Image 1 (spheres, rainbow, N blue to C red):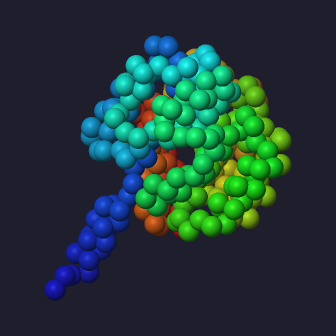
Image 2: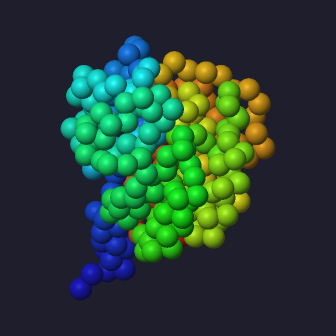
Image 3: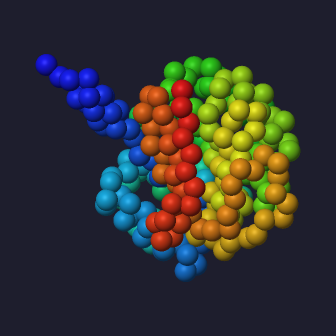
Length: 255
């Protein structure tokens, strides 16, 4: 017979065993001294405790989207699920071929997380209708939306008002838990209408400072970074690491 303490320990172990570890990387495809540092940090994390996939937040290859295999080779050898940004537009077909896709928006379920990957560079009514249908049909414990341009930001561009108007009603209606974006070359975590928003656009591009700290902002730092998401059916942990693999921010969502 197990004691109460043993049963609690076994439950914790079982919960940890169910967790998926997904890396998230934004604005990473620049031929800068920072890109290989972040890539090396991700490889070290993967070697220490394996990751299952990489989700990008756009601007996969600067300056005009043409794939650079060397940049891909520097990352952990994992399946990459890309979001597409403004710098990717001129070479979308080449990136489709590289990543095994056929269009700019899609959904993918990785364990307990369903990612709804949006194309912020051409968000139209057809894409909105697709998103609503996909969100309505989802039974995933955690719903995460990724797009390149953030809805909330204290950075240079200040967040997209147009995208906020188009998306927020769906995000709240279908209880999206987390929105991930790039475009701003910094790290910021915000909270708006019960949803966590994270900008992680420091995957390799040159950094930019903050212009005006928005009231929704809970944490911000001008730093290169990547994220690791760990999800069980009950908890979603989001950890931001810098190029030295130091934790710069961490938050936990619970059901």
